[in-house]
Length: 422
Image (tube, rainbow, N blue to C red):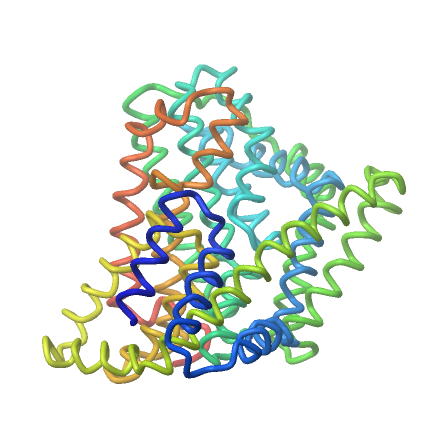
């Protein structure tokens, strides 16, 4: 029956049934055929899966990101980054990556980071003579940092699914996110050096000081969020609410770039994104419930350990699985589906579950820039007004460098656990 479940799921994916519906429908059909569980239990499972206090952080972080995007925050952060890095080769490309890291500390979403920064940076790079495909690929890759540097919606999902502290995951995500940022910057610099892109912008301390003051309130938001969580002042969910209040005050009353008439659009778009994620969680919970009842995670753990008890080889296999799943599955769905399966294996191998969560998130982040799902590629291509297919060659170096990043993060746990003191 487990095989029937996976066949049904793949069939529904192939005919373009939405992921949430496919997960719930395939699982319900198998339960119906099996006949051992009342269908009322399925509804209860779906409701209980989203009736979670930690999950409340998701809509608030999404709303905070949209408030900051509409409130002029991204523009100020980009200007500050440009003042600092604009003078070096590939300066605008580097600015794009750094701005994504800044915005990642606000939005928690890869697609939102790509859209908010890309709308300004892709046209700017093209106007400065960057190849359009290269500029668009930079932005798509930079956007993946959105789910690595906290706050991160996928980290919240993993924390809830794995029973791991979201606060610890947020702290653990900082260094790996910055590590990926630096690797992407180096790649952009080397390619730009070869192709002769950018450079020549003047740097002045007066301009820097002015840009820093202008962006100060934007920079304070991640400080307040992460400082409050790290200092034990509030939980990640409470931090998300603080971020919304802060975003409203800054966007409406200080920067005055959000009008009261804009709020209904901001709120409604946040509700739509939240509903999609919650629907996926509800559908995936039924899928996970069936797998657990059939002891699939336990049997896979036994199978993995029968193949190898070497954590290095096992981690290579898991990374390959995550990479393949990230190519075909939306990130939220992949986390909810794979976490109950892989966490027991990680436990059996003695892998720290906080570290394992970071491995999952960084690995699945590559899925944002790999076809056919590649959400960031579609978002960036739409902003650039270019075809998705034209990006495939330009994105390859970014995919390769991120695979190297995943392997380094996987086999050096200290990168993830350094700030936790482990």
